[in-house]
Amino acid sequence: MAAIAAKMATLSTEEKAAAEAVVGLKAETVEERATAAAAVAECVKTDRKGAVSVYGIVAYSSPTQEVTLVEKLKDLMNGNDANGRAGALQCIQTLCEVMGHAVEPFLMSLLSPVLELYADKQKFVKEAAAAAGNALIGIMSNFATKYVLAMLFVQATTGGSAGKWETQVGALDLIAVVCGKAPEQVSQVLAETVTC
Image 1 (cartoon, rainbow, N blue to C red):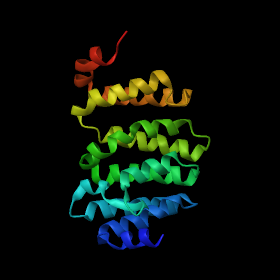
Image 2: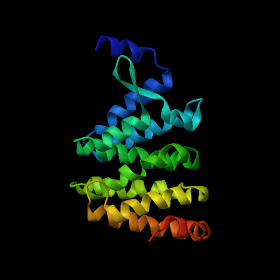
Image 3: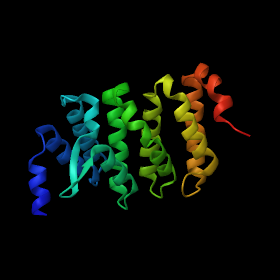
Image 4: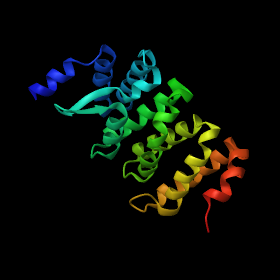
């Protein structure tokens, strides 16, 4: 633990602030999680690296293993703590709202784990997943249509890793949003994306 604490002391001021804010994503109340998510987004926004700082170090799992913000959000979404899952989703939504298209290339890979949480047992996590999914599609560039549709069709046909119907419905809902957002791009890639 002392070695990890020593490594944490070497982080930049922005990374330390983000690391402290990430801890708050596991808070009990919606308001506390929203405040922590806003603090994370503010750290990313003010960091000199800009949106790339979502790959900034926010923790160490061992003295030699760094954990980035994106990895920490994935860990929280896959964790057993419902508040942590909801906090990670709130953070994704807030990053999308605050940073917009700047974080799209870094966060779009989280769409599949977000869709998996459409089938969470906790209602507040499901609602946070739907908000985060819509926020991710909201910042999607039209150039990402092919990539996103492929990901959504896989989730819609399989129901995710757990084969849940809620994940399938969520993916279908987001496919409809993508079709409305980028109809020309959808028409161009539909034949490649949908295989019989």
